[in-house]
Structures are given as structure tokens and as C-alpha cells.
Length: 368
Image (cartoon, rainbow, N blue to C red; front, side, top):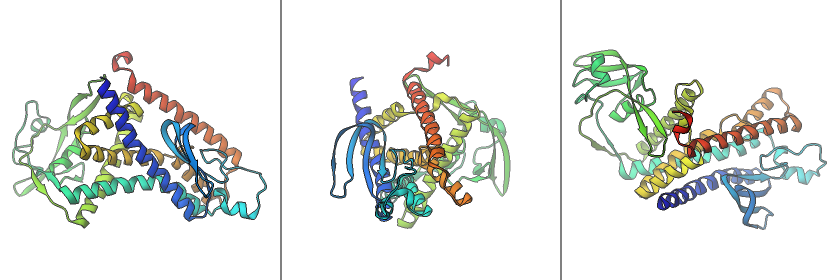
């Protein structure tokens, strides 16, 4: 138990620390390129544990609450980058302030953080693809287990699955990706059978997977078995190309899962927060550095996705304000933005509390 907790804490620090650092460095470096002064660069929120001030006057620090980080630019009222309004500034001061930069520069600075997280994931996946390749199996049905949904729907041994709901499935893993998020739902499975291609509706089965800590996830099952694996090697161009595919697949799965939770198709118990991330990071760390780095790529994409949600206080909220500014040809007032950010912050804090309770409290206390 103690070893598991230690692994979780260590995995969380080793995974989230660099990802947050690089995310904030994205903001900071693009801000410097645009001539904006950074007052503070913090890993974590709240009171400072330790730090130092560089020759440019930027305070670099590590803070107590390990739930993210921030760069406070000149002209920001606080760490959420709410603009200071109605304060007289000299021309030189304005040149260093974030809020007085052109719209495209402000948008570039804000977008740089999530883009950095996406580039991290893309780099990791591409490096893995080029170095190790990929073990795949053809999407051909080799056997049916008991109670197979595919067999009940009329699929046959030797059928080659070419698409699910119109999405192509060149390899067996692609079949699983288009099946796992939809337990109990009906999907349209297109197969090549001899010279003919037919489409068969298959009502998927489901499998509940428990993590041993009182939480469970539900996955769709078609009920088919693959043939032998073989190694697929990638050159530099193909390796990067497949990395783009991997990133887009993870984003697609994340969007699908979030939509299902919002519309009640999945339990909110499947949402995870800091404690769950620590558990996943600890398990990956115990398996070795390669699985750990691979999981870091997955988490990095999710950090980018979450930060791009149009919620005030997140990068996506800032970008939404800039979109409104571009349409209206003038910025929203600082007071309006402040109220929006306060509302967004209240929502985010409530969400953090909810997912933390969700992580910690076993499912039986919720009657599930």
C-alpha cells in the first residue's frame, strides 16, 4: 500500500511536473518573442515553496498546490491573466504589457501552451514509431469467443473488417478503437467477404473493467479474435504521419467519452482527476520508462484538450474572448472579463473537488 502511494506520488511529479513546465514555457517563450515581460513563472498555485528572480525581473518559483502552473505577464491583474484596466501607463510600459499587444500576438501566446503539449505527444509517438515500429494484426476474423455479438449478427470466419460506421479499419487495433467507446450500441460493420463487400449492423456487447480501487469503466465488445501479430516498421516520414493519426485518435476518443458523459450514456464515475492521474502514472512508472513516457504522451494530449475548452480561466476561455474581440472589433471590458473569469474559476474549483471525491470515494458509496 505504502509502495503504491509512493509510486503514485512519484509518478505524478515526474509526469505532470515536466508537462506543466513545458506547457508554461510555451506561453513564456512566445511571450518573450512578442516582447511581453513575464512578472512570474510558477509551477503550481498558491504560496511559493522556493524560487529565484532572473536578470529580466521574472520570478521563477515552485508553489504548494500541484494542479498546474501559470505565467503572469506584465499587465495581468493576477495569475488568470485578467487585464488591468484604467491604470495610466507610459508608452514603454505599454510595450511590455500583454494586453496592449496586437490580437494575433495575444492569441499566439495563449495558444502556445496547448500547442506545446500536442507537440510533446507528437514527438514521443513519432520517436516510438521510428525506433520500435508497431505490432499489428490484419482486421480478419479468426475465431469467435462464446456469446459473440459479431457472430450473432451474421459475421463469419475469414471476414475482413474494412470499416465501422464508415471509418476505415486497416488493422485490428482500429476495429477495437471504434468499438470500445460504444458498449451496448449498434454499429455498422462493413466487411469484405470473398469478392463482395457487405455491411452488417452489430449490437455490441459490453465489458466492465474494474481498477481494483472501487472504480469501473464500461467498454464495447464485438466478440472476435485476431490472427497473428506482425511488426510494422516506419521510416521518419511515415512515423511522424502515424503520430499525427495517434494524436487525432486520442482526441476523438476524449471527445466521444466527454459527450457520452454529458448526455448520460456513461457514468460520471468514469471522470478522473489528480488522484486517478497519480494512480495511472504510478502504474505506468512501475512498468518501466517506455510505458511511462508513452502514458505521458497520452496525458499531454488530454492537458492540451482540457486547456482548449472555452471555459474562462483556461486558455480556451481566453481564445474565446479573442474570437469575440475579432468579431466585435473591440475587446470586452476588464470588468466583464473579470466576472467571466470568476465564474469560470468557481466552475473549475467545483470540478476539481468533484473529480477528486470521485477518485477517492469508492463506487459503493454512490450506490453503483
